[in-house]
Image (cartoon, rainbow, N blue to C red; front, side):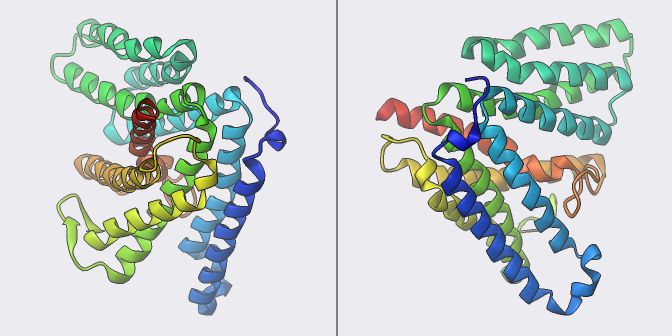
Length: 308
């Protein structure tokens, strides 16, 4: 259905209760931890992050439960902003930026046509893209810019467009996306908390000195908690192993996405992808985990459905 009333969804009530409980517990913990610095709440990074989560969570939920058109609009928004930040970080020329944004907006709508159109699109766009360095007549940087643009399209537009595949072609896909959203968020939060409090052993010091093995354990714990809290939303009739494997895939995918973005920022020598989200930096700094976890969750669900 292209538009739906989220109030009619049986998933809305339980999801709202879970999100309200999680945000309430987080606020209580933050007030206890930061009780001596509450007067400077405007400068408190943790509070800024919590407030950002407080509007992202309902926006994400409504986008998923309001039909495929709002879901498409949501995916198109984060793809567009993510590509804008990526193009800025990678130093793409303006022509390449506009072409990249235009091509990026084709990925998610291609899923509306059919899965075949979705998977054929990268080949067609790559053939067209190969004309850019030829027409630009730039032997010094033409192929380099093309490589960065193609990677950015695949990394952000195409991987995130799996969101639409899950919404359109998986039975109970809306519930899976709700579970994915909370599991990714709690995975990131738990990685931050455990990494800060217990982190001793470096995970990838050349890419991200602050990432630790303890933080990776936090990724897995947070993802498992998110899947557990949202177990009511998971598609029914799937094998017993789907939920634990989903938590594992999301936890590892979240860490994977975080390290990949760290590699990109270190390679391009920037600290943050932008300042779009208070407390986090750019949108790319917030969705790096979702970029990898979304296709992993989708293909895991496809395998589970085939085995059920």
